[in-house]
Length: 202
Image (cartoon, rainbow, N blue to C red; front, side):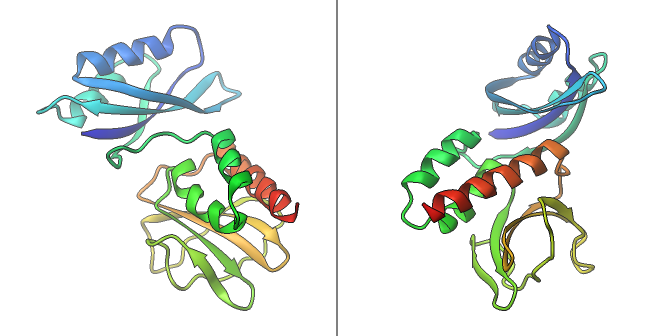
């Protein structure tokens, strides 16, 4: 069964190797690793896509990683079968080939950011496009740059982030249950959205 593990670890040589060994000894097989963020405090945040052997409990992998000095599992969740990590450059390649760039952006955002849904929200019209799990009713937000958003009061499990398309439209993505959107993800969201706007205009 595939899982996505987000782990905080010291940003020094050998740290990732220790984590990989702990995962392997606990019955996990690493499929892909992506560096999410390198921090000024000397730590890094990595996403690890792994497959577990039959009968392996994810708790045992979490415990093995947390037992390592300076390592902390931030979050673990099941991951869609056949899913893979889509790098921003691959997303840009898909955007340049798409006839409807902004619709393609909405399709790609959940995969690129490991979110549950994405939507395009117009100032006057509300949600004009979204993935199947996106809420049908989202309010337009006034933002100048990509940002985390406060969730609606009736939704205390979804984390929200948004980026500006233009003065009248924003994209919003939602991630149920975590992990929190870190600064590097917010920056990537703004950058990828900006590229999509540029591609759509050419």
